[in-house]
Image (tube, rainbow, N blue to C red):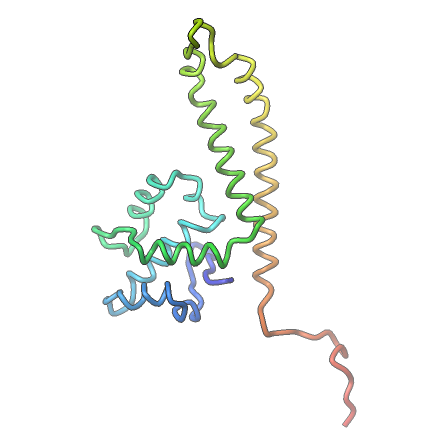
Length: 188
């Protein structure tokens, strides 16, 4: 489902989006004349969900705070509420492909590996009941050797996800273009 398009740092929203119940709720509650809050909330949803968003790499609470701070048009006292949560779930269910979901999970796994390596000092100091280290240096160095492979594989996965999105962007339901004479030749 192609609801949003981010091009040249501008989010464009398909008009048909406003006919979908979760997004219509966002539009209806916005009392501003130009619907700027609804547009800012849609931008929030895009940055929160889309695999092309750098915010997706952040833990949820940090992502929430950063987006609230960074998105122009959100009121100072704005909160992520049930209407936004419902719209996020709706968008994810209808727009996230298996490839994108795998990519997001791979990113989360890489973040977890990074967090493990970030805490090596504490891991090396941790001891069991006998006083032996619970984490061996070889575990950490093996993890370090795997970082290059993880980075290479994530880069390749990102390219595949972007390629899939671009391929899907070129497809539109209900329209078809024909090659020369593909629809037949009619002589009048």
